[in-house]
Length: 348
Figure 1 (cartoon, one colour):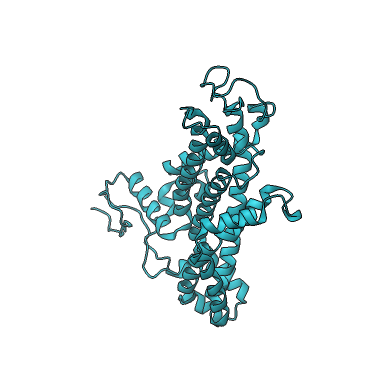
Figure 2: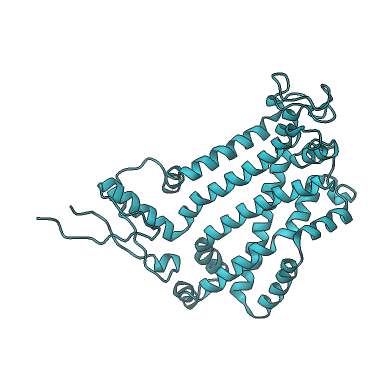
């Protein structure tokens, strides 16, 4: 049985050294979904990650409807176990843990996504500038990046948080921006280093040299030729920075360096520790916040699999061949290598 598959290479388009196989779109039949959405929907890991993220985002957006009232109100006796009246029990001060968990998602997710976007923007700008222009520009930016890399991040976070004192300076009138500033300052260096390395590699590719020879402008070479080939790394950096921001902000608040009057997942852990939730066996005061932080990080890691299959040319080609084989009824061996199908002559 012959398989109608087209074999091409993406060396010119993606700047890769090795050829990859791309399945002919006609062999898949008509699709109603866009290719990028079809790839995400076809990944079970991505679907699970998207559903979990949507759940938490909706919980943050509709917190007033899910848990009406002020989550800081004292409603019952301290350390009541979970019941039908208080689903997650009460804190050591008599506050409803369920309401605090729902409302806490707002601040924590806002800080996480803002820091992820800012650190990715700074890291991409610094990394691509250093990698493309090289010379003294690369040396200066690399020195600055290395300084932030060698300084331990957690002690630096603690020092900045204690020195600046969220809310004490006029520029940080809202302590959310205080956390965004501190976490962005300490989190941009690693994405910048990774982007610089990838830019140095792509800078030597033939398609970049051809663009330089033809007189293309620098900004067009960087943003139209090189940037699309680094989307996989950039998106992975955004997800990693967001996970870092959520965990780091919760850690700073747990250490008491945040605003204890604001309801967040980190302050929930802070008050659970201060009210001896662990010593008294009141596990419901700290488990919900910890589980929520872990689930958000887990969901974003799962989503990264699907996004990587869209932006990575090798994985995109592999998924196309796998779908072609599946629709053709051909069984393949379970291998991690990219399958390459060669056209064969029709069977007589």
